[in-house]
Image 1 (spheres, helix red, strand yellow):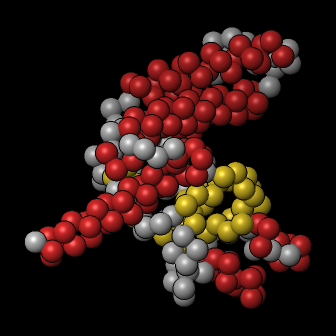
Image 2: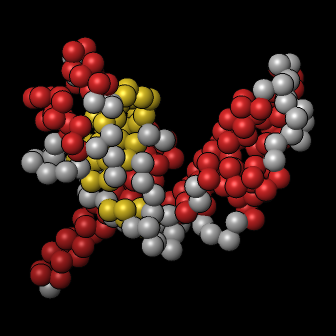
Length: 233
């Protein structure tokens, strides 16, 4: 691994070398890519082998962990694309056209929503919790005062993604593949039935959930059509 100094060339070499090593570590793991925590794996690797000498050990560690996260996202994206290509119900869908970058307000938990007053409704779903495992809503829906209140309650405005959500999707950590119609094996998202829109922190996650939702909608439509044809016979 290259020595990390203040030199831009050194930093570029360090980042790329760390990314290549991260890919090797991730590929050597005996579990599916979506079940790996890249930050935990990076810290374990540092504990075993240490870091190269550096002018700034803290920065070297941060960049090393970031390299594992980038490599993990790269592999996860490839896995999602491969899985989508095998789902017959999605063979004519261009998912990239459905994913939109957006600023999101992320709240830490359901208890923190009370700090938003009436604006809590932006996180509601016809009186129930959203699907997924996070609390996300478009930041544009909130006033400056509401955003300030959200920040005091632990919320933060972040870059994320929005996508169509025509049918419900559940998180199933025991899936043998990363996506099935109506199911995904990954978190980092939420979605609302009242608006048919979902939100995710990462693009690859948005793609996966969007694909699972559209596939489920098409599966349901096909089932209804077959039932109608059967009833006519």
